[in-house]
Length: 297
Image (cartoon, rainbow, N blue to C red; front, side, top):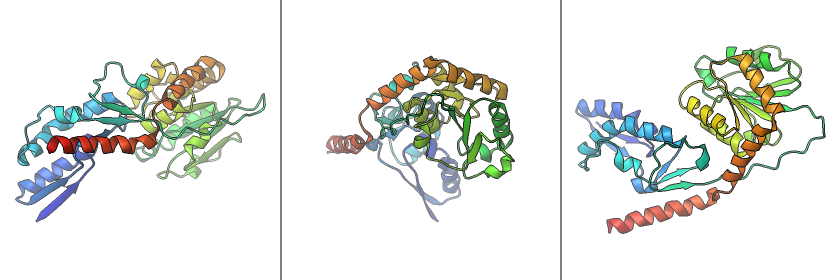
């Protein structure tokens, strides 16, 4: 039997394939791994600190595959760690101690729409999202209900999303100032949101930051504690450990009452929007590929 394994070049995507590939090869079958050449760079799905951790974890298994393929050993993953790195994260969001690849290219996606202008005295809008995974691993509906219950008594409008894996109806009857949906366009919500309650997922956290929205971050798993800490370090929000609804409420009250949080988030939004446009990324990747071809000639 011949088995083809296809992956992106990211360690987090290749890593789960390696045990299966190794087992199939051990059983006497032929395997082939198809992945982009290292000159097509890495795209960061999170902060550099998490990328460095992923490379260290995956390096021994990847090195076994390198030896099997007749490539030079790379036991520490230095070749992968040294490859060009593309990311949407502004530099200030990175952990200061994180090792930085020799060539980091930072870009900014399309600027969010202009913030809506509301009349003075309008009721603040707070967005709540715990991403698309939390509901699949036991956090729904209890955590969602608890946070809604803690926030509903504030003079706010609360707009929550639960993702495809959950049904908003399972939250039960909601107070009049609360609305829950499966999905809503995040960028559009951020044009009106005065604050956000999130779980620290990279996409949600970065989206709020580059829109200048202050955040109460309730980390649940994976890299979310790191992301929450960075938002707090930047002054762009508050990290709420322990999934404590009362602490979430107190954090939201502070975010709405203290302009310093929005000002700090706004500074990071301006930094991100000053990065090269994502439309410049294809040319950057083409240049990397051309440079590799020249080295191989």
